[in-house]
Length: 183
Image (cartoon, rainbow, N blue to C red; front, side, top):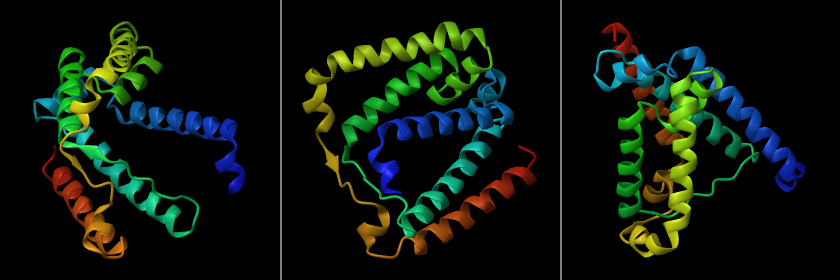
């Protein structure tokens, strides 16, 4: 395992393969389609919510299972209210203009959607360049009102599985209710 942690090429390859796999899943589930995303925003097609809740469940279980078996360590980052609001506004603006989030625009571009290729990918690149260029001017503002870099289990002082298991059950019940409602 140490070989993977110290080998940047293997890490990049694993990241690429994971990204391709996730993009394939997004495409197969239909959430790279503009109509499905708009259906979620208009609250008549809950495919996006179902895929995201499933991803959260798999991710939560997977990350903490890897941690339990010492195959991964968590490195939570400090964040702030200001950076969360700013990021949410930029994300929302891009989403409103094109109807894709960064993950779904990559999946849609990979499947040949011209609006994603001609609008989304250049939008991500230009937006990233602008943010990187202006970051040094905005850094103090973005880092104000910061909050802890601890995880919820660390904050309340319990074993993470005491939160994961009920959260998984709650998410599963939510998925079942959405499905039964025909959404």
